[in-house]
Amino acid sequence: MRRGEESRMSSSIGSFRDLGVTLEEGNIGVVEIQRPPHNFFDVDLINAVADAYEALDEHPGCRAIVLCAEGKNFCAGANFQGGGGAARDTTGEQGTSGGGHLYRHAVRIFRAQTPVVAAVQGAAIGGGLGLAVSADFRVTCPEGRFSANFTRLGFHPGFGLTVTLPELVGRQRAALMFYTGRRIKGDEALEWGLADALAPLDRVRDAACEIAREIAASAPLAVVATRATVRGDLAERVARATDRELVEQTRLRATKDWQEGVKAMAERRPPNFVGA
Image (cartoon, rainbow, N blue to C red):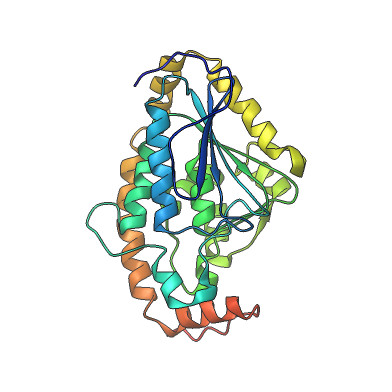
């Protein structure tokens, strides 16, 4: 990895679908999701984020990354309003390493070498929570909302959250989030360790950039080496987890409860699950 040359102004780094990728003063790269207002994710978006991280890994002027988003929400999960097609697009076809296509790209995100600070405004829901949790640190606001809402859709958690979420908040709190789909607000997320800093809504990105610049001020080779030691085999564990998650998601997608969960969400009503 090439490191060391300090950036003195904002400059665009490549062209990525639905992403703005720039290098800012202070040796930080900014990856902005540009699907406002809700920034729903799909295979293409996760692939683009992985590509951007890999490009910034190789850029000599980038020592830390800020992951942020335009609009009201950080990432409100998948867009299920379109029904089954949109639901299928969240994972892609099944593979043998790291789950479906989306999960293979998700594992690439975890394998990237540069530290990431996520600026989480509004909602980080479902796979959006998985994307937020893939970062090393999260800055949010009182209006922030974090939810692993999979079981409220009749679905199984994904994006490696069965590994990453318990490591952040503990097994008990992670299980509570998984089993109930409860939404955790910004101040509670900070208390639980799901977020690392709380800022006013209009300063979330600035606060994330401040942490990134603080990281970038440290010796870059030492930071990368230390991060690799601290994270250990996280990417490999996420790859194994997504294999398991995808099997369960595929099985549950064939159930009546999955159909009811998606329909209830579209109709903004409580689901009526029957266990079939």
